[in-house]
Amino acid sequence: MTDASETALVLFSGGQDSATCLAWALDRFARVETLGFDYGQRHAVELDCRQKLLEGMKDLHPAWAERLGENHTLAIPTLAEISDTALTRNVAIEMGEGGLPNTFVPGRNLVFLTFAAALAYRRGVTHIVGGMCETDYSGYPDCRNDTIKALESALQLGMDKPFRLHTPLMWLDKAATWGLAHELGGSGLVDLIREHSHTCYLGERGARHDWGFGCGECPACKLRAKGWREYAARAA
Ligand code: ZN
Image (tube, rainbow, N blue to C red):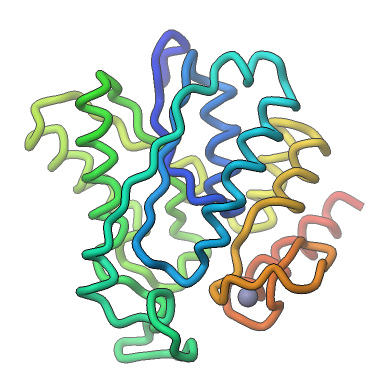
């Protein structure tokens, strides 16, 4: 399904999922570029984690260091302007209408993947990798496999390029995502992601838990903690 002579562009926020996706791409493609978005999110700390993860991945495998290419950042302040969410404003995280938490930024993944495709087009890249996941997706409709498939078709048509949107985590739960990291890079990669990836919605590094840093109370921290416990139990 992938060509080992080709380049991939990975949506890389600095979180657990995107860090695992980056390792997945480094394992498969000849060259890998990364893309992060700055849209005024509360957890700008996540963007700071990116650099440590990139450096760490280079140290893990000489082959990965050779394959890792440019790291792009795109600022999309407009996304914060048009959304009123707990990720971009200083409000409490709660459930909103339709069972969606107010961390939902409407259309965020559609915007991210479209910008990624535009950048990929310019750089002659057709493989785009993202950490969207339908298993632990908090009900975000733009994480669904059907959404990604529809967008892949739209991007192929709209830019007249054979784009492939790869979502290696689509059917994995958080415990299985840790398992995939172990498969790809052993305990060195698991430790790197645990220590330096950032998932907390509140942007807190705070206390060091067995699953990494974070407030421990927000939905993202709870999901990550639950996944780590299940992974650790399976590995034991
Ligand atoms: Zn948290």
